[in-house]
Image (cartoon, rainbow, N blue to C red):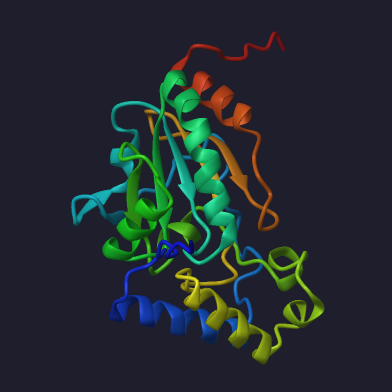
Length: 237
């Protein structure tokens, strides 16, 4: 018996527009591959922008994520990427440890509210994870997240993908669409994970260097425990 694939995105004009964006950006290639100024680092204040919370359909300041305690901010890959599905599965396993250490978790993605909610449901992302929408990539840029080149995003793909062949891109787009996993958003944008203390200071800044550059969750847990004051390094000198 065949099963109908769970759609990762709704059938809406917004999804169609996000699909066109993916195809256009596939053809044009990455644009922002290097910093023009120093990105935020550990101990800097975490940037706060107003982003729409997909669960309540209302704009909220990003700083509300750490208003009551440390927060783990997860900047996601595009909603058509297999890496995102893998990260969702990992997050489900890791979430109890993050919660026990004392942090809330916020997912920041490129989708609008409806696309974000459908994606979260399709990947069983728990309701306690806040979902914020950044389709203009303003927060991604504020946190110093760059676009990867084909070498960093498509390193394990056949050569026609590494060359960003137009026909290969079109074939991939059609295959994923028929499987209910349409390619959408910016194909080059790399994710990142940041732990923010309640005072708004960045504890750790982890920017992926390639598509599957997973962080060891114990790093996030240690950073959260440091942010709560449970463990904190003291240096004699």
